[in-house]
Image (cartoon, rainbow, N blue to C red; front, side, top):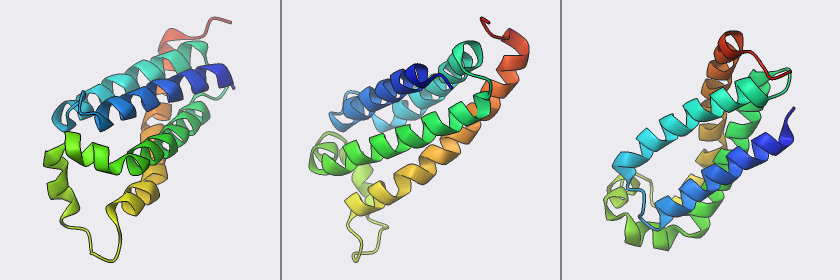
Length: 133
């Protein structure tokens, strides 16, 4: 496991979350950036990662999901202020659950799914690009 690489990728993901909270990355463009970040992450994991690229992708995705959900949940009022279009998605939530809790609860699951996709791409890329070993 290349923990330094995983940590660096999580930090980049956290920066993207902060940029999203402050409205620098708008929600329509955010998905494109996450796809690009996932492909770049998978390549870096395939090239510089340890022996099990799939596991590194899952770990990176899970930690990134937890960190992003924590950032967006704790800065929720700022997020809504800078991303007014996202308020429409929260109108579907039952009133018994505050949206911050939904974000906090969903983040790890979204991160796991994202990490599985990054891990699969990293495994595939490992066969193509190999490692620096």
